[in-house]
Image (cartoon, rainbow, N blue to C red; front, side):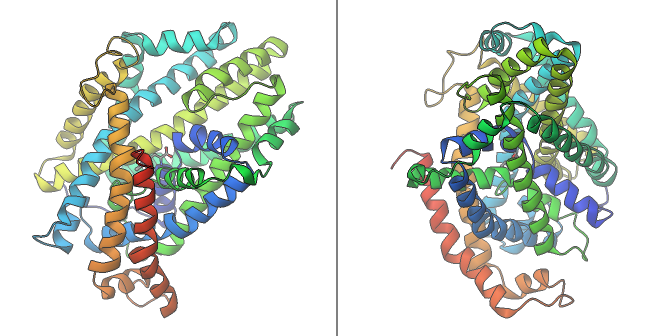
Length: 454
Ligand code: TRP
């Protein structure tokens, strides 16, 4: 079994964790939710969710990971031997594994669109909705793209923590931030940018219903990569001098800024073309925007080409760094729990993801009518079970665990780096209070909503 290594620098720690957080969730899900949820009012609620729920949970996961320096399953086993809490460790490992199976399908689509953007093919698509349907419903092409992105992720993970995860994050994250800056300038210089911004920012308090507030919470958890073992596993590679609260703050800040900027990039562009109502979810990125790019191609080809290439590159980078972080929890588990070598463990995780991912990928075509579980396609099933059930459930268990069960000395020791940083006692109490009461109740609300009980 390989020897455990840590990330080599604080910058590496922040960039890798931010890489996990910044993903498809920021670029396609957030802007649509803002539009639907009342613009600036939603953004405010979202930021509150990040600060009051997301941050404490992220720190809680960091505490578990760094204190134990173990994979998620064994971390809970060490902290609460022979108790039901161990289940949470396994939930983390296996839910990550599930998420990767369907996340890689969508990541594959982004690669396909990047290739089409590069070759100029996007400029000649006349009906982008029909095009997307035909592509995602085909058999071999989406499978091939999914396999390629899985392979990219595999090649990063197989190199290990420093040479793989850390090095790739240090390369991809700055590139991603640079692309965002370029795209922002571009988008703001478009003729219709003002209407786009109005759509995004108009505070419409009437839309702030309880269901929108719950969506804001759900979005905050997904976007910050909470409750699936990713952050806990990464934290197990944190060095002892890393400041947990500060790191969590930086990650949450980067994640939120990227999400808001993604909205600033997309909506002005969409509105500059015509007042199309942006599609939700995949539609926005794979149908509405290709349409926008085609029109831009038509007027100034080079501008359209450049915008499209940069945009899909941004999406691919965001997806890849998140995929890497979802691949690592099951890989670390196999390495440490079954004493496998990293190449063998990585290969097992990748192979299972490819097999299950194939079912998810074909859910849009050949297997669209195959719905053995709860009447859902494989893709929807994996999405539902992991993001809608285990994500809120996991969040609730983690906050209860750290709030009620974990020794306060461990919490204080981790927050203060064994007494070397001063943290006021009231801040620790507030942190524990949020974990004990506030977050479990909020998570319970999301859970009930996601299951459609209210
Ligand atoms: N946060 C990522 C995004 O915004 C997705 C992600 C990565 C994730 N790891 C996770 C979501 C763990 C939930 C749990 O796309």
